[in-house]
Each structure stands twice: as structure tokens, then as C-alpha cells.
Image (cartoon, rainbow, N blue to C red; front, side):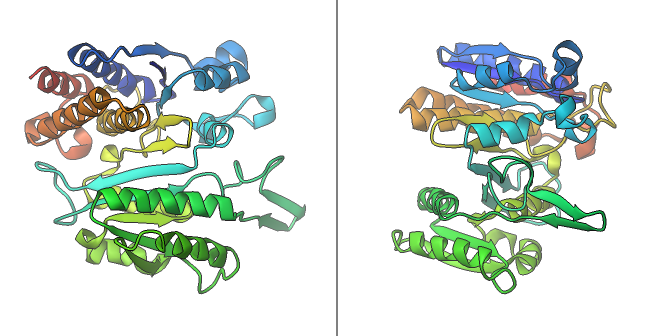
Length: 353
């Protein structure tokens, strides 16, 4: 089984190295037979190849069983026509990674704004207002005149049905509750289509409760009653924003793990950005990428009916939890003074146990 590691930009390589080291230990401990490979993307690739994410890099990803994508500094990339290609957006569109799965939970040893949270966002990943991926050709944003800017929102029955089904499937394995977040009171056509699909899928899961919340209310309820949520399904932009809120409430974006999956491909990608302000300082928290990689192993295990992969995934996340439970292991973003390497060494020591 081949897994391709794309370290990315800024802190990306700094957190990818310890994550790869931990995966190698898991590979040996559980005899997983993983083949770990890596490839430069982002500014390093741009300097070598003239593109931040080349066609060859995309094909390399296609040929692998899974990909681990480090944070990328897309906001600093040159225009696309000059080689500034977003790896994240390209992979989500070209590999049809329609589900962005982002868990948030409170952890022992981690200071959080709220007392209890254990939820998962099931975010639609290929449509909505995201102009870099919602059109077959061209951008979903355009200017008909110099004084008018327009953005097109794309919602399809296919996209809505499959993300809804993914959410209900997950909820049926957890605590049997789905909350759908929307703005149907204003966006009656696009949200109307999305909501009708969610309600239709809900009919196939009589044992799963369906709650619906308008997006602005959802933002408040995440603070007021965070323990009440199980699986939250929503469209692209709402899921992006609210999942960041949940991550911050439960301990910080440095803990925000995520995977992007479709029917055939899966990618681990932390929810946070490339943090150029601390790049090169050796203090970045690798937790989010580590837990994202554990989620990817679990997804591969379910996809290929391999309990060894799922066991390794659970062991990896447990090792991270054990490390985080001791404040002496915390990196600066969590109020500690440990370096990336020191934190990773503690995680790897926990894996060996």
C-alpha cells in the first residue's frame, strides 16, 4: 500500500518529518506493509519545476492509495497561469474528494473554552461558493464591469445526496444524531435543494435523529451547548468556518485534524494553515497532521477491510492523546515550551509502549 507525503510550505516540512517518523514506527509495529514516499510541492517545487503543483504531481497522487498533504501557503502563490496551482483545491476537484471530515473534541490535559465536545463536521468539499473548484472550466467568480464582482454558488443533487449519506452513515456508527446547518430562510433555491436532499436521505435512517439549524444560530449553539452535537453536515463555506470555530473552542486550531475523501481516494490534511510567522522556529504543533494521518489509516482500513490499519490508527491517536494529557509536553500554542521534535519524540515513545 503506497502513501505519498507532500510536505507543503512554511511549517509543512517541519511537521511532516515527525509524522513520517511516527508512521514508520507504526508500520513496523503493526507490520502494515506501507510504502511511504514523498514529493516536493509548493514553493520548493515552483523553484524547481515552475509550478507549485504540476500535472506530474497530480498523477503521482492518483497512483497512490492515499496522500498526506502538509499545510500550503496558497495565499502567497503567483497566479495560476504563472504556475501558482493550489494543491488542495486541485486534489479535491480532480480526485472528487467530496467529503471533508473534521472532528473536534475536548482532550484530557488541554485547556479549552468549553467543558465537553465530541463532534464531527461532514463538510461538502467540491461545490458551494468556492470559486476554485465549483466550475468545470474557469472561475466561479467574475467581474462583468470594473465596479461589479459576482460569485456563483453551485449546489447539485448529486453533491448534496452523497454528503448527506456520508453524514448519516457516520452518525449511525456514533451517537445517532445529525445536525444539518443551512440558511434556507434566505437562500431558498440552493439551500432548498440541499435541505430536500438531506431530508430525503434521513428517511433511510429512522434510527438517526435529524436536527436543523440556521448557520448563525449554529455558530452560537456550538458555544452554548457543544456537548449536544454528534455529526454536523453542511455546505462548503459553512463547514469551513464552523469547523474552525469548533476546533478553537475545543483546544485550538493546532489540534484540528481532517481528511478529504471520495469513493476512491483519500487525503490527510490538517485544518490549519502553513503558519509562516513561526516557520523555521521548530515550535509548530504536529498534532493535527498526526491525527489526520491516523484518520487516514482508519479510512484505508475500512475501505480495504484491514483491521491492522484500523488498529494502528487507534494506537496512533491514543499515543497523541497520552502525550497531550501531560502539559509538560505542550508546544507554545498550547501554553508550553516544547519543540516540535520534543513533542514528536514523546508521541513516538508512546507508540512503542
